[in-house]
Image 1: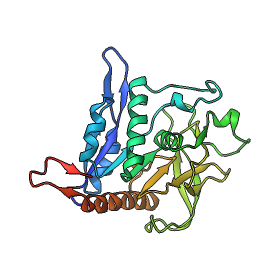
Image 2: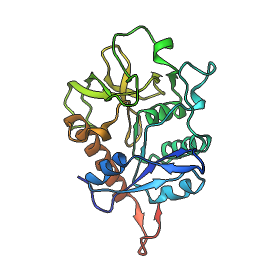
Image 3: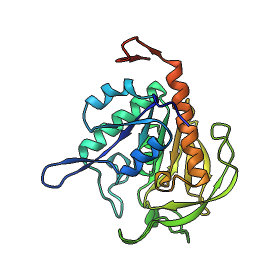
Image 4: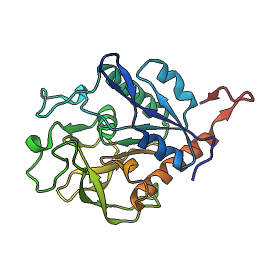
Length: 249
């Protein structure tokens, strides 16, 4: 699926218990590695921006809620991400967009990318979005993720995903309400919530669900193949010095 030399940077969370610790679910690592790429974790630190020159693509992982989305005050059910994670994620997202590095953004990562690119979000679906019978989140942590369909529109950037209805998992109380300029929706829930969108760059894909938790499904396999394919092409387009220590834009 990808060259073993293709490197994917993965954002991570911060767990503030006792001493703050980095936290990234192994499902994200395994998802990227299963496609043949090398995953590296981008820490919530200024050094993460310096490490972007090593990355052929970036995976923005799921998150709690970003304060930068609170344009009308703190919404219902708000659970903030760690401030260091938020500040780093915003800078990483800006840099990825500016440099046109291929990226896949999952769940809260999709919301982050949409906000940084100029879109907006529903701060809480239950209180801000139109009434819906579609369940987008589980009620308790011990429950499995809820499931619903997504209607997919074919796009030549994602040739491995067939148009039509696919079943996906779901666990989010926020969602993109207005896409950024020049972004286009490619996946929509039965209630009209945007579940996936593509940006205007080389490859910028946001998915509201968690493809890394069900990598064997056709739609999730197709997303991964498209992402890693774009990352591999991006790698080939760059000039690599003989020492392989530095990749220049």
